[in-house]
Length: 264
Image (tube, rainbow, N blue to C red; front, side):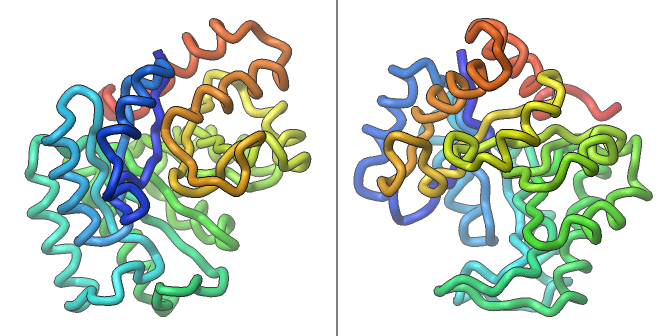
């Protein structure tokens, strides 16, 4: 059995055929999906989806470093207060995605100041520790600062660095923090990432699709779906020179430790 540890089933891309998307996922042996949020509005929808598909979809609630919901209101402090209330729902198994993003803001999103990004990130880390929940960490063009902020919490956190795009030299630092490395569909076509992934211990890897984004080869350009985590697993097996069943077994254990285990 495979798990997609990062999918945005709460996005409008899936509002017309979510039942079929879930069905295709299960048929491809991807029987669990962690639906990840980027705003309070997303988080509410994520909980609803997890309720609709019990035992298949699990909810991660959180606030993205960019303002992904143009209607989002309230100060960062007020948003954290609202997030704290959402975490009380028993469908929530993780906090995220949260972190830092110093890249240009994509269309349909609004930029946040570095100060607000750091405030939101730190508060979500503190919530994760308080509630014994794993973190889904977003880092784009900001890894040194992300690692700096996480370092004081070493030994208290668990979770995943989503869509890892760092260098070889950062692998040890991230391992020491107790985080896993999320690998996505871009692994199938990004040669630089492939070279880095060869050095990441299999015992520290999780698989994610980031659906509807980062569709793997040979379907690049189409909407991504959780079922495609199987393609990523098959590619990783080739890359590592290991049997597919070993990849699946080890990463399933990793996923359980990251998201369903207890804080170390």
